[in-house]
Image 1 (tube, chains in turn red, green):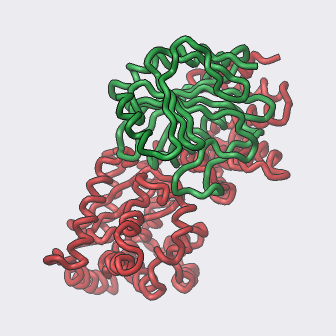
Image 2 (cartoon, each protein chain N blue to C red; image 1 turned 90 degrees about the vertical axis):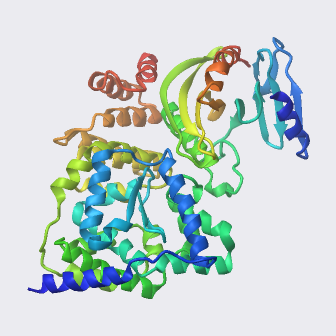
Image 3 (tube, chains in turn yellow, orange; image 1 turned 45 degrees about the vertical axis):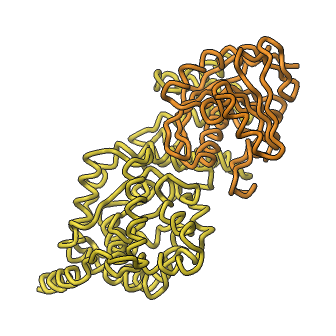
Length: 352
Length: 185
């Protein structure tokens, strides 16, 4: 009985919160104009993920939590490692692809989107940008707006962290967005426990930009599972991209051991391979053994990841174990005969 | 177009530009020599050193030699040294391929990708090559090709980039001949 009443309240709230077009030469009008330019850049960016099925899916999840204000929201998925969702003041939601890699199911994604939609409804981002106009000026504003679009190195997790609290919403804005977001996702029938999971799994850089979720997490952590998780539909629509997103994380250059340690718990070969590569690249004392263990686990997984053979080969080559390297590279060539780096692997194999 | 490069170069303190003498072996660094093709000019600006035939931004061969463990491939305006992707002497050719795509992503502020890693002659030794797809800061689609060698824990690498439309195909054959002309101590 509670859900219809909640839905009605959210409907009224959403209707009241719908953005009115900014007027005249106000700050808001200026920001709206700049945001239109940023959004135009997003639409033509090579970082924009162009996949009709995935776009429809993300739009559908957004609309399921946004309800009547769905029509004023646009969702853009940009190929970018790391975790971030940005609600621009004009209703554009920019999702980094690394975010989707980190979500376990649709309910978690819905919770995250609902949280950002709440920021948009509350005009938090607009106020944040107005504050930035008062301090560091338009250049900084555009830099922040460009983040996550593949247009600026500011968009990397490290540089986002460097922006630190200057970019973060205030604690009260976060708590209000948390509350509204949880209500939106619950009204759409999503499992509230998903909210606790996303904040529990979030990495340091993301948490720095979104302070104050401890209370909401603690409440929802103990909630009995209810509502849908949408795990199957989520995996179906993202499965074809996950290998590329794993590659993006590994190419990003940061220490991704903790990320892949968490993802590898699923037992998926791809994530175990990612963990092996993360250890191989980090190369701290003891990491070589951990890498080898992860690569072997990847190959023993029901969905064995053949790139783990190359990982084992490169690791052995770095350790000077030519025999082990040759054995692993031979397996890699046998399993992936058309691999993009096959000529180089053949060269490694031909070495005495 | 070279005139444009010259004008741009003259406007910058410390920038030196000179037309290359085709067919005359030129020292690059770390004991490496290459022979220019007709029409190339050499530009030196602080630590940046590249060759171009049609002009800056239209085609460039960047030369980086003797990169040691912990050093970046190149500096990037606006980025502190600690934030630059750095070479590690334990890197394999596969890792160097990835390092270059990461460094170009940081340089052009657009996602760069590398592929088709393969062995290539590098002077009298065997080095490796790979292809690049990227975009410049304005979003212009670019293509590229890199040739490198790992020797005694250091990296030598030459990176050719040009707009994907027209310029890459126009200049790539000459660049291939330049890369094939490498001699080294």
